[in-house]
Image (cartoon, rainbow, N blue to C red; front, side, top):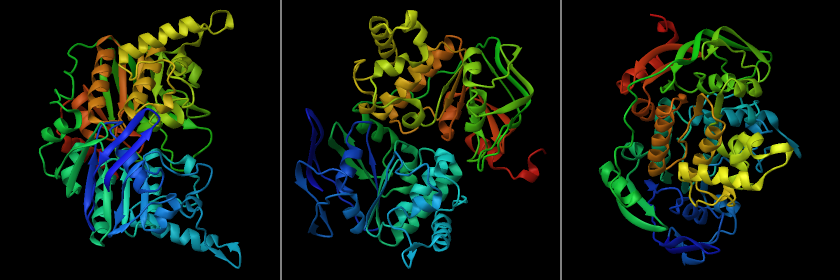
Length: 501
C-alpha cells in the first residue's frame, strides 16, 4: 500500500500511509484509537475505497469493490466488532453466505461436521448448535476467528483478536497464527497489548494521527513503542495502590446463584467467597469459563430469574439482588464487557447516553430538562476527559477509548457504592488505558468499592489491591496486588482434582 489517503468529511483519517506485508509474515499494526489502523485495514479488506494511493497484491494493482471481492482474492478479516448474527447458531454463522447444499437443500449434517473441524483448528470446544448470542464475548471471538480462517489464502487481518481472550486462549491463538503464517499467509495483527507484540510478530508498524510514526522489529523496547504511539514518554501506567480501606461494601460467603433456566455455556456462581471494602479495587481472575462475567451479571440482577443462597450482603445488610432495579437500589453499578452491544445507545448523543442512569435528576415532573442534561453531561465529560468534549456528538462516532470513558462516566453518575467493571479496557489503546486506570483509582479513593473482571493479567496485577481467582464458578485462591503473575495463572489453570488441596 502506497500513499493511502482517506477523508471522512473534514476529518482526514489517513494522510499518505505506506504499508507492506510479506508472505508468511506476522506484521503488527499499532496505534491509539483514531490513529487510522482500522481505516487502513478497511481499505485492504474492501470495506472502504481510498481517496488517493494504490494497493498491489503480489505485484498486481488491486482495488476491491466490497469485502466479498476481497475474500475471493484471499483476503479475510476478523473485525473488532464481530460480524456475527446473534440469532443464528454457530454452524449457520460459520457458513453464512456460503452454505453447503445437496440438491438445492441445506446439508446441515455436512455443515455441522465442517463447523466442528473449523473450530478444532483454533482449539475451541464450542457447541455448533448453540446460538451465537448465548456465547460469551470471548467464545464469539473464537467463532469469528474460525470463520475468517476459511477464506484467508493470502492475507489475514486480525483486529484486536485477543481483546476478550484469557492467557491460555491467547497462547492457543498464537500457535494457530504461526501455523497459518507457515503456510505462506501474511497476517496483519492489530492490538493494543504491547506485551504481545514480541511474542508473535515479526515486524511492527506504528500509526499516529493518520501517518506512519515508525516501522521496525517486533523486539523493539516497549518504551520505544509507547513513545511512537503517543508521541511522548508515558508515565507509570498503573496508579499507586490504596493504603487505607473502609467498611465492607460487598460480602459473599459460600454464595451461589441458581438460575431458573439453565443456559448452555453459562457458568453460574457456585460457592463464591469474597469481600470488597470501601476504597478497594478487587480483581477477578480466571480462564475462559471460570464465571467472572456471570458473577458480575448475577450481582447486578441481570442474569434472569433465579435466586441467591449463602451470605450475600451489601454494606452489612442481606441483599437479594433479584433484578437490575433492586441491585441499583442497593448501590451497584455495572460497566459491561460489550460497550457497543449493551453499554451504549450508539445512535444517540454523548449527553443523552450520560443521562440514562440519572433520569430523575434531569427530568423533574417527568419532563426532560435540556439545561440540566447539558450541565450534567458537560461536568461528566470534563471529569472523564471525553474527546471531543461536546455533549451533542453521536457516541458511536467516538473512538473506542472515549466510548469506554462515556460508559464509565454514565455509571458513576448513578452514584453507586459498588462499581462492577467487566473488561474495562477491552479494545482501548495504551494512552486511554492509563487514563481509565487513573480514574478508577480516583473513584476508589473517593470511597467506592470496585470489583473488576479482566482477562488481562498485567491489568489485574498492576491495578488491583487484591486478586480473587475463580474456577468453574468457585473462588479457589486469593492474592495481594502485585503478586507474581505466574502464581495467579497457575491457580486459575490448576486441575479440578487439585482444586481444594
